[in-house]
Length: 314
Image (cartoon, rainbow, N blue to C red; front, side):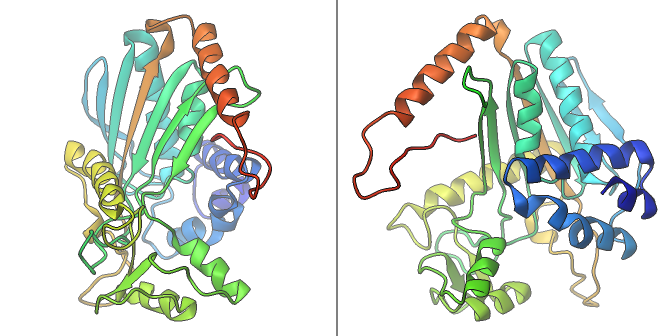
């Protein structure tokens, strides 16, 4: 992956960081964000001229605990790690920190960033906006990205607690999987411009491309299953990814020039938060507290008709 990125014009040190982010995804079972995305999301966009292989990493505003970064359309797989490293360094010095970024691009699996934080004894939080996919509750126009909100915390388990979830009830990759399996999309996950709840998987994939269909937020279409909650969380991620850095919002991140139909850059925004656990209690005690409760969850009474085990995130 590093060699491919270098061949596309990415400087070797930046390509090494980017390849590490993609590798992390595949090694942690997040195959939707690993090597499978190297060509279509990164290499092809570089070759199409809508993603810069390298660009200035500009710190616009900085204090002891905060920073605003402009990525100037460069590789999000390099911009993101550099921002989280800055955030962790500030948090270890001052207790907690937040860095926001504008004019970045797709930064890979969000779990990578909070894993970096927890490895340094911090609680990590990150989120990013994305091309418009989610319709607001009672709406039918795609206005919000799948906008993940992600948390990572160290634990005395053999693995940390990492929760990396989109704020949509589903995402395009899962619907593509339904298509490969010849399955309908479960009801409540997709709505079209006429207000119809759609289940025709092949038609959904076609209409998602044109914006005629939208994904539902967590909770599904309408309010019966609490879809307004997912809509609210997606909006929080959007605001933290754009309003704090005067960045571009999801409706303008379609990647298509409406006047010409040509592909165009998608200047995404991200936010990163790191909290140094040692400012509250010894990190070993925190890890024990974490692991104790997570084990209680996994050891609680199982559904006799279920899978026979309970999972915790990470």
